[in-house]
Image (tube, rainbow, N blue to C red; front, side, top):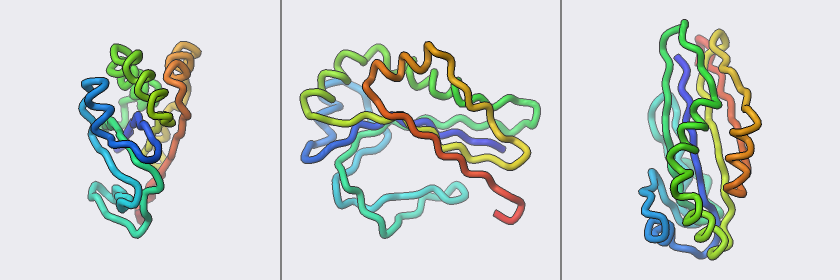
Length: 148
């Protein structure tokens, strides 16, 4: 099975994440304040770590899973789905990002097995659409073995 978590995050210091909801109308999947514990997903369970957040944050997360070995796992499709959700709010997201001096990040966390490595390819239009949000882009690839 392969699972892709796709995130869009706004990060900064000394801002209340509720301000983004007020400005955009987008309901986040998660928010946090600097000093909060970082939570990790381990084998489908959320585990709180000793690591603390350095910044305040507001985040939308979407998950896509593929269990059939015949299904192609395509990271671009996951990112494009997130973009489809964000584009109608681009003006308000950029305004609040600039007003609060926030950083933006698209992230993909890919959980898979060695026999199911996904396609990681982005068309120029997808890259350009992400760039319009003035965002960084990060991919984390976690490959499970039978022993994992």
